[in-house]
Length: 396
Image (tube, rainbow, N blue to C red; front, side, top):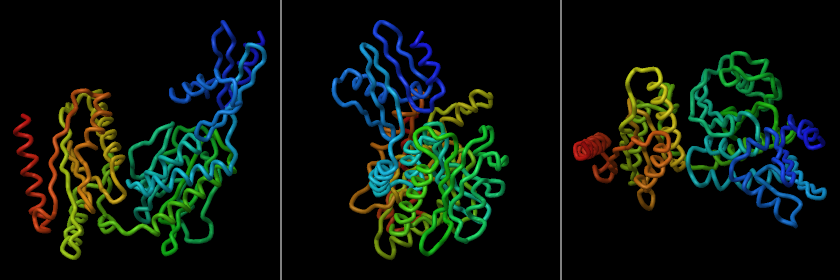
């Protein structure tokens, strides 16, 4: 009876609870069930230990209480100074390792906050945003485009004044497509400012806090925004030319398209002529994707395309760029410093993950470098097209 009473008391707790009674079923709450398999395994091992009354799991601390043969595990949030230190120790090396910095920031900040949603967005124009880093329901989502009007972030961009943060409720923004269907909960936001340019993006989080209080979450979001701004201000400019192109991002994959690629390739060729900065392009064709018009098949195809574009972004270094040409065609544009990036090895990892969902999926890809065509972007594309056509004929 006491066991059932305790279980009911902790059922609605937003932090994990576990009660283990010898010879009886383990009682857990929903927050515990939502932990990863790896975290649950660590907890089970820790329960058997006689020492270490506390266990640290990312942003979560667990305390073990024993009474005779009974063991209770109760989670509570980590203290603020430790969370900020964890953020800095994880985010700075991750930004330096490469990949899109907005996407990287969401990947690190999302789990630390433990909230339902977290977005790290880049301002594309006066009317739109690119949601390059989107963490929702415990995982990183593909990038997407968002219209500024009606969004919760609009207040952060409407002026270049002092107001660089917000704390409000999601119920105030019924037209924000990120918040549609969410029950009323807390919404936090922080603008990203550079010394030479204000309001280049923002970070926001929403949902009832799981691991941190609102005050702590505010501090973490502000710290992440400052770290990202400092990194962007100090980083050398990449040779992407996307800012001068009004072509919208693809609605399905969230990736830029052919026109943006053409501009970026032209600028890469200019860099090659000026300072011999070589670059590599990789044409990638996703094969055996279900493409008929049956509703279920179409949905499966869209899910796989989104997953593939997301995985391509994950294997990018900071200056690498990914483009979607439509259908099943992608292209990567990658600067070369000491040596060419191991594209084939990285694509093998991507396909290993996707084939868990669809075993028949494969890719055909071909690469070419600007140095092979003496800096000619047109010749580079012809060479890459020729190589991928040859591979397609060989594999058919």
